[in-house]
Amino acid sequence: MTDLPADLDLNDFEGGLVFSDTDGSDDSSEFSGPVPVVAVVGRPNVGKSTLVNRIIGRRQAVVEDVAGVTRDRVPYDAQWNGRRFTVVDTGGWEPDARDRAAAIANQAEIAVQTADVVIFVVDVTVGATDVDEAAVKMLRRSHKPVILVANKADNQNLELEAVSLWQLGLGEPFPISALHGRGSGDLLDSILAALPPTPPVIEGTPRGPRRVALVGRPNVGKSSLLNRLAKEERAVVDSVAGTTVDPVDSLVEMDGDIWQFVDTAGLRKRVNQASGTEYYASLRTAGAVEAAEVAVVLLDSGDVISEQDQRVISQVVEAGRALVVAYNKWDLVDPDRRIFLDKEIDRDMKRVAWSIRVNISAKTGRAVDKLAPALRKALASWEQRVATGALNQWITALTQGTPHPVRGGRAPRVLFATQAGVAPPRFVLFTTGPFDAGYIRFIERKLREEFGFEGSPIEISVKPRKKLGPGGRGKAHG
Image (tube, rainbow, N blue to C red; front, side):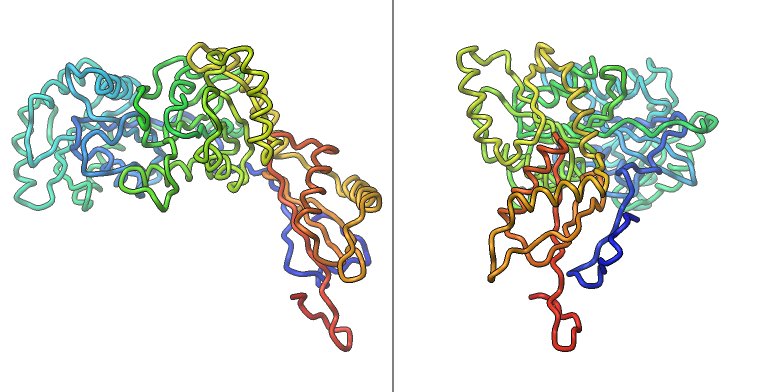
């Protein structure tokens, strides 16, 4: 715990205080060797995402009774009988697909090639179709172990229909109901049996990659940037806004380090105003921001900063995450226009003037190499700690030079200051009375000028001393 002055009694102050020495890292996420990968594939609308949710034991993959909701290959952590593995949800595979459907099918084929085991899902209520038979040919070319799943076998009669799927030549079909859970335990046992042997645990390895959420409104180029960083077509890109629905995880190497990027759905509306797929996509995006350590908010340099953009930035700040703002399509901005654009950005981003800004082009790759240094700087600020002695010397000089305005005949003073935690930095001021919001903002601004914290939000809370009632007993200040 942080040392407090001998004459300072915390019982004399409003509320409580928890001192934290954590750095925001999660020990449970430490890397312990390669995790096997299971890809879930099949034609559109056979229940792949529902099955993924059943396997991982929570509703995380976006599900809707409409074909084509899943478009990218989306990994999720799963565990069964003490064995960890990654399950990858994919979009519907179709032969001879075109345009966006072709990109979705290509993502499914990449998932098959990179998997250790493939789950091939067929709708038992429909039976084997020409598309299913074409998918079997693709799976055989991969030479990967395949588990055939007859989904939507919601009752015993439908389970008997699964016998007809022997004709696909993939062995015994597993009749299950992903929606209701029928047969899911047997399926999970068969998945574990098909996985490669567990590798030895590597001791003493450093913590895993830093987690980066890639957020922004629809069609600003998030998936294009992810593909540029990953140096492959990792996410489906289309000129139509809203292509990405599920958050897409990618391990990306930048400037000698591995980063875990999450491409998220573009936020059109507030969560409570969205519906259907968009509602669940909004929840997943919010969850991705909460799970990240730093967020890259992507803005379109050719457009004015909109209410949607401000809402995305607010979501990151309220989550307490480090922030890098990337202005995409900067190469399309006229050089004469850039001078005025810089001034507009300074005005519109005044609320988060502390954020780190980079000007990039996801399409051409212009200046994307500046992202890694910006992310490192933001994370360093996010985890920065100020020594208690230096903090109190600074706050004493500041408040003596610029005292709080007089309220009720006297000006409240800071008795003691401490940093209660990091990730994000949290400061607590023990005072003789409440502080105005404007004065707290003044302290934050001066705190940044003195100690930096570029790219990180700061939380400052004030603990006023309780008013004493008759007899000297503490009485809560109203």
